[in-house]
View (cartoon, rainbow, N blue to C red):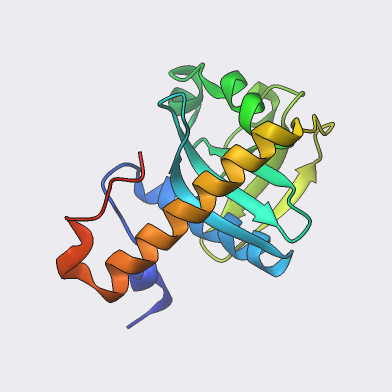
Length: 160
């Protein structure tokens, strides 16, 4: 098995987006964050990557794999309601000047990532932080359960 075979394609993203997702998740892991891809928010939206560190700081990373992908999506400002910091993660060949300056910027490929711009933190209220952290914990536990007991996965309450 090669490193490329370890990228999980769930049908929701392109190969480019899946590679960016893996590189960003690797970088965040090394920085002390736990991550979940395709994390469902109570608003009905899904964060491409939702990350929580040991201090409880919450980041959402919105992956854009192409200019067309960026232009077709205007939901990203809604993510500020669920995180302390919001980032765009893009492949190295995407023109960075099209991305809004109020969000952070991460450039990534399948092997790693680098933060090029930090956004100003917008700290969550304590009640919202607790609610999204509990949602994160539950989603992570349900996903892990479905890995070690796949036959029960369909019976588990959906994380949405």
